[in-house]
Length: 170
Image 1 (cartoon, rainbow, N blue to C red):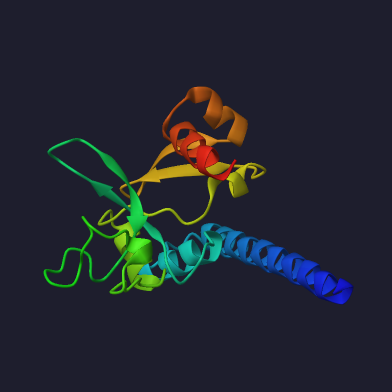
Image 2 (image 1 turned 45 degrees about the vertical axis):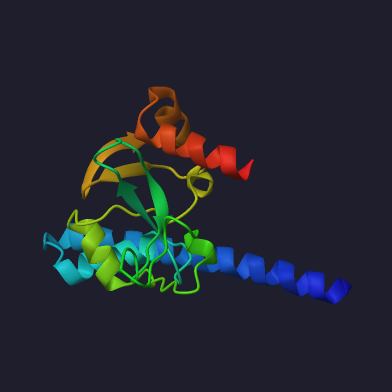
């Protein structure tokens, strides 16, 4: 049993190292592009996004908004959402639905996000606390930038999202 715990700890360390290397790789690619003066192609932007923003790849949350009530929140992206005879969203939670068809966070999802077609979250914001710089995007544009503490102090979008997530994971 002790060896299992050791293996689990090593796997967690390797995963963290892999994520750090992917982030470093993305930064190096971006710096190389910037130094060369060449712009990013849409495909390169998508690759860079996917290398820098890691989360579960089998499901991701997408922003929903109700124009009538003004309510909004996040729910798992689902290919069957609101399909008559398949989606029973009003009666059944997405996580309990027998017809769930969660698309992976792939190039198509990243393209839709980068072009402003959809808003997604790519990881828990708590993971960004120690980042040198945090960028907050809305409809494909940077709306806030700073460190964790700076963004919390402004009370803007990052602070609202962080506090909402913190209340669920505390």
